[in-house]
Image (tube, rainbow, N blue to C red):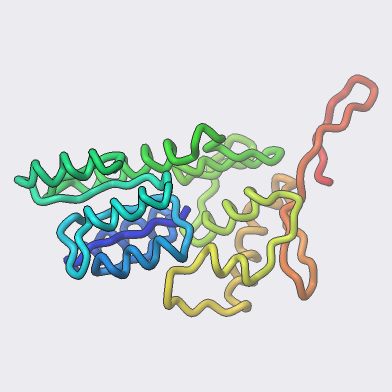
Length: 235
């Protein structure tokens, strides 16, 4: 999942960005309203965390423009503790939730999980493929009901492959989904991430196929009925 953080306080923005990335979210950060509005017009996100007191364009104007484009992107607004009027305006313009500064990081992370769950639009937040299960909101993966220890980058890679089970995913597509703006990630690095993930999930029979020169495919599991004895196999 990809998050846009619009926050002009560099210290707060850096702390939030590092925390969200450690939780497995691809997180892009901008420091003013014009950059936020431009990013929202050109990139797809799963959540916007929006400070209302932004330079160059206010957070309220960013939100107004977003909703004028009929976007249903979940929005969590950040406001100064005493800005009740701004909070009311933000909610009236279509914000989904707000937090007053200062706030506890653990509470913000809980709000993020709730909003990304809501942003799924009623669709599944847990993806399954045979013995492999991934909770997109909790950012936890299980293999045969046992939690897998995955890095943030491995979690992101697994999510992309699971969302496209049985379909080819190119290296360029993986870079687009896994990397923040300005981050240089080579094809060799992608190969390393795939190798590490493959070692952790193939013990359960889940296979990542390499299509040389094109990309990767997480093979889908199917249930095969044979003599009234259902078994699972990858296809």
